[in-house]
Image (tube, rainbow, N blue to C red; front, side, top):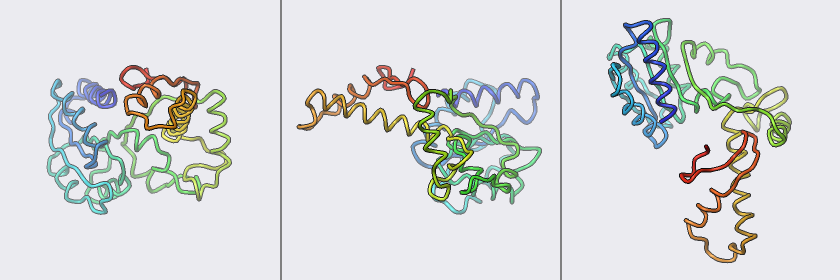
Length: 238
């Protein structure tokens, strides 16, 4: 909800400032849980505004041709395009460029699975993918703020920069881990901490009920690579 809300709020800001062109949006998402859930949240919040939905299109994560979906967006006349995708974005923008949806008259809003992954715009050797960077002109996105400090972050950074770029895309000397590798790093530590807590309570010799695992994980707290990690009663980080 927060991510979708920030996108709607940004479009509303430009609608009030610029007017025509910002009053209609096209929505494109991957047809899986991540893309659909964010899209539904976006649509719910869009109803509270003066912004209309021109079209909503979906594509499969492993699709190699999204020309039909992009054709519908082109026919809708929308100049603002929101994308919540778990994969396939390079194919989307390459085909969007072919049909004329990339340029000065179009704005693309994308989620953190695109802006938060350096592999979106970097080659495997860590260099900038110039073609992809050019295709992403007019793209706006949001990422989770990371403090990039602390003992665990420094540990992650050292391992990341020591990695072989051919084995770890986006890694290697002089690179910085993006938000998702850092979150996965902390996720692994949280899982290990929960297992350790279960072991100390003598729970590993028998089947552990799901509600017990839930309580164990929600009781974990530590200083991680992404900052202080703890969980509220809903399993969310405060």
